[in-house]
Amino acid sequence: MWQVIGQARAVSLLQQSLKAGSLAHAYLLIGPQHVGKMTLAINLAQALNCEGVERPCLECTSCKKIAAGTHADVRVIGLNQNENEAEAKLISIDQIKDILHSANLPPFEGKHKVFIIDGAELLSIDAANCLLKTLEEPADKVTFILLTTNDRLLLPTVVSRCQRLELPPLSITEGTTALIESKGIEPERARLLAGLSHGCPGWALAAAGDAHTLQHRNEEVNRLVDVIKADYERRFDYVAQLAARFNQNRAAIYEVLDLWLDYWRDLLLVKLGGYDMITNIDRKNELTEMAEGYRLTQIKDYIESIRAAAEQLRQNVNARLALEVLMLDIPYKKEGGGVKNG
Ligand SMILES: [Zn+2]
View 1: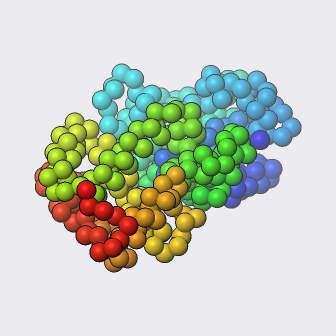
View 2 (view 1 turned 180 degrees about the vertical axis):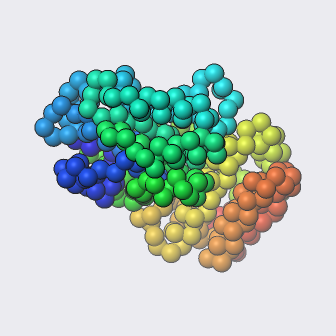
């Protein structure tokens, strides 16, 4: 009864190790945000403490307590748990010392202690070194599960003490099927959510339950299409708005640039006949019409411009300038193409 969506390889490896009693003392789950790392970690903690036959059964007291976050032997730490230091940017040594102290005590109510460290790349150097000592001399009935989006940001010595499990993004087909089968989402909507989630079902499930997410994305894409069709004056108005937003909320602008990237990548896919792979599946006709107005090389070049702009923003160049260049780079439509200037 593993609840993680997809990830057959990781699940089967864990199941085999559970059966053989050969689990590692520490795992490092690597994968993008919302791909299912936490779900898999919780399922493993449940399997280790389950009182049922098919572990994890999700029905027994242990499984239920772990799911509710109230099991004394299973703890999750990360930045969010650091309530006293809301502004803290790293997982502190005190947080690690606290769990190591608890790791040295026998399990209270279950069979096995599990410590899940969410965002392990945020361990401070001191915290990572402190954890390292325990990973080198693991105690019985204690498992550490480290979750990260990028293992290159962890100390190599920590990485080498853990068994790596990579959780790759799901394919669009895999994601669509999972949303239909596990959540009963109707096929067209499931396909749209699977594409927009970029293979991360956690995002798709959250968006499925929140109309605002799709509505907001729709508005941003409408704006994008307007801007492509607009004259320079209106494009620069748009830049002024974006640049002002960038100063307040950087993440929001990276999201907008990701939408641009998705849209232009879709134009490229349409041009190449790869309809199966497009993200904005609900805009198939619009994309087809738009793609007719451009040559393949123009689309490819513009994708590079969007990537360059995102990179420059990350390097702290003047946001307005970088975005203005992006507006100037929007390719001209060829004569007689499906897109009209307006
Ligand atoms: Zn159970």
